[in-house]
Image 1 (cartoon, one colour):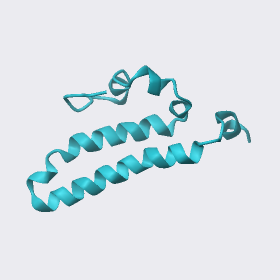
Image 2 (tube, rainbow, N blue to C red; image 1 turned 135 degrees about the vertical axis):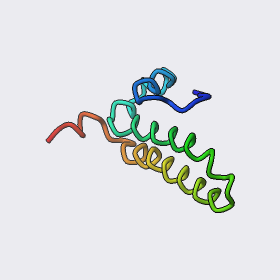
Image 3 (cartoon, one colour; image 1 turned 60 degrees about the vertical axis):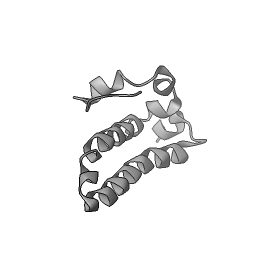
Length: 88
C-alpha cells in the first residue's frame, strides 16, 4: 500500500488498500478504516515537520498517536464479533 501522493479522498484511498485488509473483520467496523486513513494522512502531513528541530518531535508524536488508534481498535475488538456490537 505505498502511495506517492496524499490521498484526495477517503474513497480514493480505500481503493489503494490491499484486499486482505479490506476483507478482514476489522474493516467492517466503521471506525477502523477511518483510523487507518487518519494514520495515512498523518504520515503525509508530517513529512514537512522534521525540517524544523521542534517539528520532528511533534511529527513523531502525531504519527504514534494516529497509529495507536488503529491498534486500540484492533485490541478492543479482538475476540468480539461484529454481531455482538450490533445487538442492543
